[in-house]
Amino acid sequence: MAASLLRVSRPRRALLPLSSLRLPLSTQPQPTSPAPSPSSTSHGLPHFLSFLAAAAAAAAGGATVALCDPGVDHRVGGKDSTELVVEGEHRRVPQEFIEELASFLGENLTVDYDERSFHGTPQNSFHKAANVPDVVVFPSTQNEVQKIVMACNKYKIPIVPYGGATSIEGHTLAPHGGVCIDMTLMKKIKSLHVEDMDVVVEPGVGWIELNEYLKPYGLFFPLDPGPGATIGGMCATRCSGSLAVRYGTMRDNVINLQAVLPNGDVIKTGSRARKSAAGYDLARLIIGSEGTLGVITEVTLRLQKLPSHSVVAMCNFKTIKDAADVAIATMLSGIQVSRVELLDEVQIRAINMANGKNLPEVPTLMFEFIGTEAYALEQTLLVQKIASEHRGSDFVFVEEPDAKAELWKIRKEALWAGFAMEPDHEAMITDVCVPLSRLAECISTSKRLLDASPLTCLVIAHAGDGNFHTIILFDPSKEEQRKEAERLNHFMVHTALSMEGTCTGEHGVGTGKMKYLEKELGIESLRTMKRIKAALDPNNIMNPGKLIPPHVCI
Image (cartoon, rainbow, N blue to C red):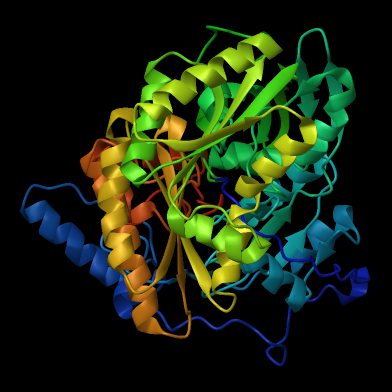
């Protein structure tokens, strides 16, 4: 499943004359932040005295004073966090800062409350923040991004980069207010090199639109997150999708990129060569950094040839463990599948309800095989044999384009079908990933708890690489249901971590998964991450409150 959900229609941007670009008055609707407690206040005498007291205590014990995020309740997003609303320190943005931005952005800037609220409220996530952006800007060139970042660094204004808004772990929240940089105007395909099989694009290009452009050339970009995802956001979250089992994740498909660093410097991380041993791998540092180190402004992507032939197959199983075992056996056999997708019986029931189908409501595997006609058919028959050895039944495969589209439509519409089961509910969507040999055990262990819960829970997996997702539907007006959803999420993550897995295979960390990072990576790794962040972003303007847990001190 992709790291995205159904997109909500975007409201029309309010284009205001420059004379009206004044900061919102107290009479206008504004998000409210709870008053900070004395222990979390970052300015003034109380904080200074508490710092001196801590320093004196540390000195007496021979310890070093730890530097942590100021003004932050260390429970929110930290390793013991159970909070839903992400809070932050919000300072009023100076009017001269707004005017400086307006001097070169013109009408591509707004302080309209509805627009700010839209950008500060995730469309596809249950995560929330106490604040929304103070300003939303729409740059159209790298030079404008550079000027925006330099102005923000000068005034120490937080920045939240914003792409397709399909992320689900709170990546685009603005807990500290500040500036939301909406990259949707930067959507040029700058150059295509057919013989080199690469393309240079701006970050606002969507992967679906890119593949439509590439199709006449016999090429495609092989990552397939959900509809609406853009290349910049896909880089920022290190996304993947159902084709990752064959082509890898975003880090494997980016040749180089350009980014504006917090001080305004523009870096290019490499050449167009397919491989390089020159210097630090800065591209992989930026990929997956979730906007905390800079704003991506250009990406060079590795492309693939469109397959000449494909076969889509589907098979049913009595238990989800049997289905997972077949996925594992298929990968161990050396068969080069392009997709291996697992849907549990609840997900199949949702598809039947939503689409009027009559599929057997049992755990189901779906495969895609590509290559020449003979090769794809040979691989299909080999997998059919593997499935029969693991109690698989009703193995069907199709080669005709319309039949393939109809069969694959079952998987493509799985998420929307899940929402249709409980239309008034929200979804807590989580993903974990484990070593392939532990997939069957991890899914089976998690499934027993999910089935025992009063909530509706659906399982979808990219079974070929050990990555699986749970959609937990809950009524947001009922606190006990939200807590139950969080309990299930917590259990899944810790089950995966106990099996040498990860708390997120493709959705990213944002604010939602920060609390699990210390257990997964260790405190020294997190301190190293924080030192890198502090070196590149000493004013902490780049997407603050994300990725690195606030309890980590250096």
